[in-house]
Image 1: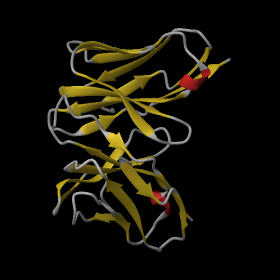
Image 2: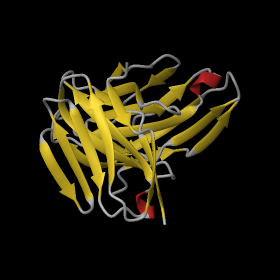
Image 3: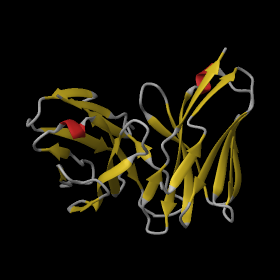
Image 4: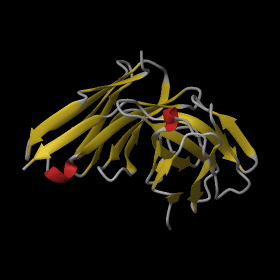
Length: 115
Length: 108
């Protein structure tokens, strides 16, 4: 099992360009998350999904969009890239039990630079 | 104020030393997680606990619910333990909140 797969690993964008960060999981988890990690800060939740067809905003959703057409895939879309979106992005999943028995599984991250 | 505070921010140790990383939180939680992030960037889950103590190899995690505090200990530290250790809590709204991480460097 691959677990959680993120692509690409690195990307440089110009201001105003758009891109999609891909996330795929093969664990049949219902819950999927997108986080961003900035230097000196804890991970911040951008969007999450509790199942196919259902998405919701996290703490820092502005400038991003998501979709969840299948259980396996949860792409994150940046429409008009801005320097403030320079960050490392992590996709994560869990079983969504919402309690003690549900560890997070992370992808390897996507390092995005917007110049 | 962050809901999850870790200390120290940075820690340098000599190989073989006993290491303690602390985590304090200010909200009600259903579980606390310790995560490890290696220089390559990937994040892995080390522990998930809601009470008491857990041990895995040279790593020990403890939590005191009354004091809202957790510690991660590493015994007989080794250079391969060098990483960023992240404390995270799942609050009673089922949201995860993350500390900023502790960067550990173990020198041979």
